[in-house]
Length: 145
Image 1 (cartoon, rainbow, N blue to C red):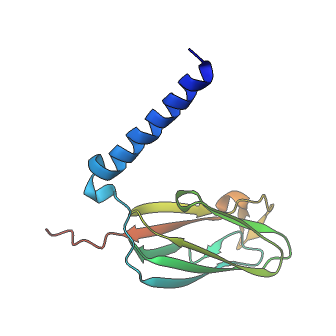
Image 2: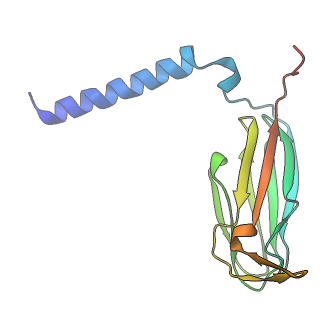
């Protein structure tokens, strides 16, 4: 039997299993939710502080998030939010915008994705690795049911 036919048949089978799982077997709590509501937020990479402000962001599951991200530093930063496919470079002294829908509930880290050095802030050593925040996506379904 032709090896390309076998690979094609295997690929079709894998896709079919994924579709069946997504349509019939995926638990209701795990299915993506879109509410149609928009939440606008601003995140600032604070100048020479190696941190984001705010460090904790709360949104509801299903919200469309429009984020304006400001880099106050004279060097590049980046922002990454792996759970929602965000990875964007922030040039020095610039503002960027990212958009995503918070389809799953939970706590998801966002972080600087561009090595940006280190320094001292209020007597404490801070570095690229301290630029971590948390996106908290709340359930839109009452927890008391």
